[in-house]
Amino acid sequence: MKTTHIRNLMVAALVGVLAFTTTIAHAADALLSWNDGPAKQSIVAFVEKVTKPGSPDFVPVPERIATFDNDGTLW
Image 1 (spheres, helix red, strand yellow):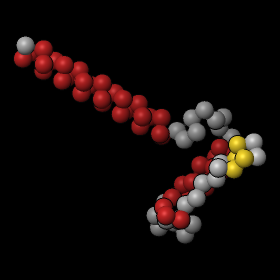
Image 2 (cartoon, one colour):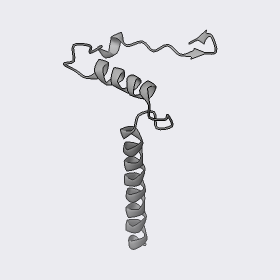
Image 3 (cartoon, rainbow, N blue to C red):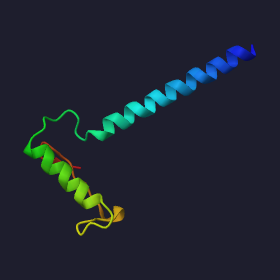
């Protein structure tokens, strides 16, 4: 019984580590489904510039506003 419990904990820990590393890998490539080109590069550069503390273009979190256009409907 004790061996089964330890094995289950080890499997759960391994699954957690794999899920975490997969998330990190996806986060490393922003806009993963986009083709690499001028539009993607421009958006990524803008986000990096305004979210990097110390940057002259840094925007503090409380001042950040995102607007999404869904076929003319802003939300």
